[in-house]
Image (cartoon, helix red, strand yellow):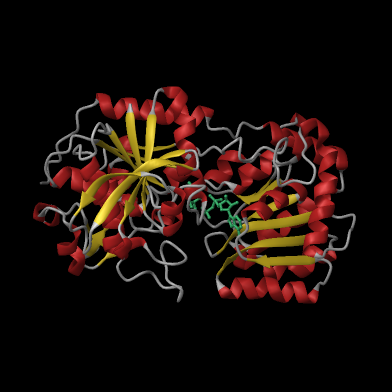
Length: 486
Ligand code: ADP
Ligand code: GLC
């Protein structure tokens, strides 16, 4: 089975969030199921640099305003096809925004181009390669099913996976002519979204199957509270919407072999974490202390609920906790943490920025990781926390609800607790969860049992890879329904 995964990020080549981790991990996870997966990516400078020595497999003379080459090769353990189109992707920094923090003004063209290339590949333009399925991730690949449906010649099946429904790729109709999409697409209502063009909407409406990254989120996005305008469409397609939980790359994230950790450890050698904790204290300028070190490794945004945390830090410190923060995002949240660090020297350490290695050290040394998200499609940092004995403290939403078992007395008694789960995602409930965590930490037997139990949780790709493989089988076996509205 040949599947082309279409995405704007893939670890280790280019990453701004969990999407990259998932796209980067899927090919290896699916290989044992007879799925051969290549990844189609925009040719950002980092991607092309990693693909050095790749083969040019196709040339477009006029590709969304300039020429483009498809370059295929092996990079970062992945079979990659990159779109080398300097006029679209040869820009410094972030894939989505310029140095001013604003979206690149031609994002519609940049990501329509990604989707269009996938469609072209499904026509057989690359010698010896014809994918059966185009697996499209998030809005950047949302137009793929539209090209397949309205432009001629493709027989590929399409699956759209929603990693975050908050990002929808909505653009004015003025871009339509630049999209190389058959005129018919504009007449049927399938790409139209509240008077604009919706890339994600198009994908969700037209794909053979829709998945999202946890069962709870698959349910949530069909409700008004979480669907962000797309709930009606998804309700109407309920028989083709499912949730498949993300796993983690168990080689990349393995505390027994992680080269970043000063001291590796396993569930039976959990006491070895002390060395890593000491290293963390030193790196973040924290004074040693008897209480737990809480941590944050995250985008600092409203979604992640981290605007609620700065106001709770005085109480956290008063109760004997310490906190380290690794992240970047909204200036107000960054400033909130920086201010707290000034007020509590030796208790709060803040690193504004992105640092993959440091994120491993935090998971391997901190006592708990705080994830108070208002919504969370899946979330990966709680999974890394579980694997590394860094107890997750999470709100009960999306994938967080599906992966962490709250340490209430019954769960402690039964030996199944793996973290602290709170609801609703409010400052008050988060404050209470932090207090509860500090109390649990003061019961070492309970705490260590919880850590060990977490380390034994199944956070691998095994089950989920099987579910994707089954879904691929399903779309290849079934005949596409002909929509009656066009
Ligand atoms: P999202 O994709 O919504 O940001 P996830 O939890 O799915 O949330 O994935 C976030 C990924 O990005 C994880 O791999 C996490 O470790 C990583 N990450 C987030 N912020 C940072 C940071 N400042 N430095 C290093 N890694 C980070
Ligand atoms: C998105 C979501 C996150 C999820 C990740 C990978 O970025 O915000 O919850 O884990 O995608 O699927």
